[in-house]
Image 1 (cartoon, rainbow, N blue to C red):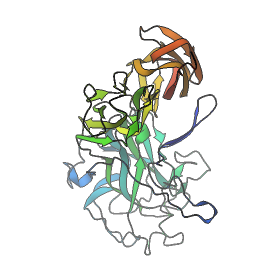
Image 2 (image 1 turned 180 degrees about the vertical axis):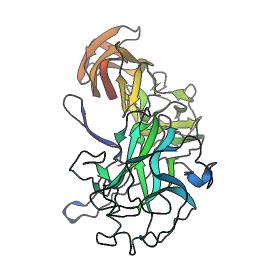
Image 3 (image 1 turned 135 degrees about the vertical axis):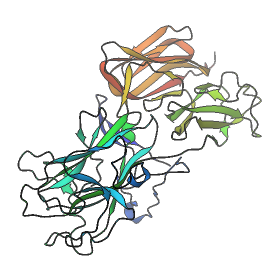
Image 4 (image 1 turned 180 degrees about the horizontal axis):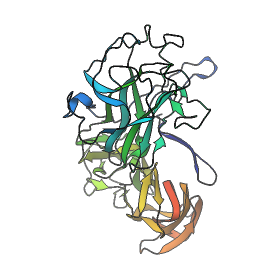
Length: 459
């Protein structure tokens, strides 16, 4: 069994907690009653290349100005990183150039200062992480630095990916920018007694943070350092290098073949996938016979795939081959499950399995959100099933959403909310789905499972 992205949803459809399991520190595993612990954290679908570009890779070299798009206020300086043994940072970084608070002396009387990373767009469905190397020594508990994020380069939010990413919470007195939020001050690495920055703690630290929730958006980063008001407390400050966005690099095409699937005498319904099929990526299915050959008429079909025309007598066992590809090496379709039967699935993060999305919905934090004043409709065409369906159970996560079932002629044959059942007045040869998202509403996922009709007994 493989577990990925655990979401806790309240009875009203609100998402209470969402853990994409982007690293091994968000959960712990253990065996019960002394049993052996067999869980392992693994990466599935990772690409063949990951790269980071630092300051020294840009067009700027000391002492010329920084690369276009970067800007700073206050006492940030760009240039060769210096060794300051009188304050303790006696180990230079592995590269010559970076950002620091006054390269030759400590930040004795600096004011509130910010350093802004230029816009960094990454596409919907991309797997990305913010990463940077830094060295920090600030007055413990009274000053420090933090990262802020923006999606419009105007409104800034304190960036905290959790998992003790920061050293501690900022001082709680006063009204400083970093009051009561996570900060770096070096206290987890540096000495807590004078001379704070000296000793064997002269190591640079690499910080990595998952950006999955910002997929499909343009983001800006700001590094803010807030010093202590007194010049008596002299600490070396904050050094930053190798700020970058890691994005996985993927191959153009690949495929996966299921185990043998026994076809029911009454039919197998249709095939759909659970996962993210983002723009510029694709996923299709080919149905193979017991010898591994593609069955005529079932080659490279878009999801959902109807098994209505499958000869059940000639093909009592089949294999599903999922074909995946990308037109963008930084994106990949992610397939979490393949369903054979009567299940339709929607994942807001990538709805490329037969869903039509209106331009009026915005993808934000894993939700398709209606920020306009008109109802927006997500739709799925009618899907033929090889067995008749008598009802459909719906389970979804979202708010202010209405769901409709449609028949082969496009007529509405039932209504419900995100959680509910639509029972047909007579068995249907399949079903389609319409999802109406009201203004201010949103949806992150939908599971629609049809109930197969049963043959009559002793007709």
